[in-house]
Length: 130
Image (cartoon, rainbow, N blue to C red):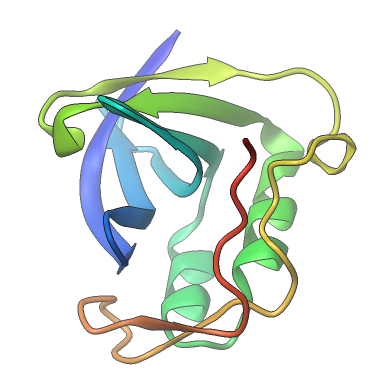
């Protein structure tokens, strides 16, 4: 099982909605919240390239498209507690991501700085699965 830690918050709204993670080998990940429970939040996570992150942060690509494009090499679910205070496990999932209800709606674009610090979402809120 892979483990990752928070590298950057990409979108924050009443908690981390979208994040960039990194593992010990330097691989980067993009995570989007799918569910919130007392004590832990669940995230859909895919590997991500620097170019995809840059385009997402600049508002050139929507969140769903980036997650889908990056999921061809695999996708994961992660349960994160304590506001990302400790590294978290990435549980590899089977099957195509499109076959599951974890993806956000189309059209969620980030607007703001390319470094992600002042980003706000434009469009529908990030989907959550109950």
